[in-house]
Image (cartoon, rainbow, N blue to C red; front, side, top):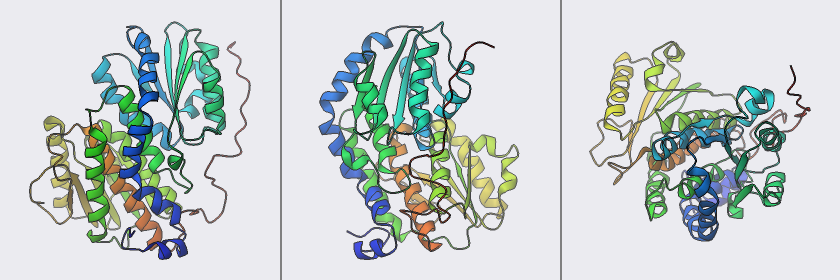
Length: 382
């Protein structure tokens, strides 16, 4: 298998074996997850049904780093689907100030996303939520059957655990297939995807994997901006994080919404900046995004302005990547091929810098599973 034009032996030599494999496996792993988790998803729906019928339920989507971005991608669709309060609160925020985010007066469904389930904040957030809310329930979505979060959730009467296929417990430094498959499993559980969607998403992602090597490489890029609205706001944040992680911070990456970008962050753009816009299929939202896209191209300051679009039209610019057959698809569905594009871009920039994507942090002070975090006892008294 070739990916980014590199055969497997070259990917091994460049220290990209696991990262390449885990990006490239996503179309297949989504289909496997749909089949292997079908019974678990049905059981999760049974667990959730009485909770979701409660109008005062507070849904809290949580995780750290990439896992927090999963919640940001899902929250807009969940809000539209259920019409109730959906909050995205990272475990790092919950642990630092739990009573700033949770209240004892309402029932809570804490949806925890975790690749390993061993980060100290993930486990602490679960315990703190129960300490604050006497009516707290947990849906845990994780990739690691050996993780502490999986162990605690499996032994709790007020929790349900969804365990993803072993292949999603990414061995590379950066979360890739774990990120997308956790979104997929949550979307299937909450009924946010149409039947047979994984097969369609897999075809779209395969378009990206096939077409990306021909997309012009980026040289001399020192800054990257990802822009996205609604579901793509969280995806833009994850894409920027992926670029930072895989380039060891040598490429500085930020994210914003297209409308928010003019309010100060646009000053980030210079001649060594690449801007990537995730274009929405929502007709109203799309108008604003295309306005900014055209403005950035007229400015002529950024080295590249790339648009990802989901339609069958001929690209208006060589700096456009179109997902064929995705016209009219919900934006949550588009998160999947767009994420594969962003992951591939980060990987290519990492390789261009001579880094080893499976272990990109040269100093060795940043780890695959966060280390060095002390969790302290929380006292609710002032």
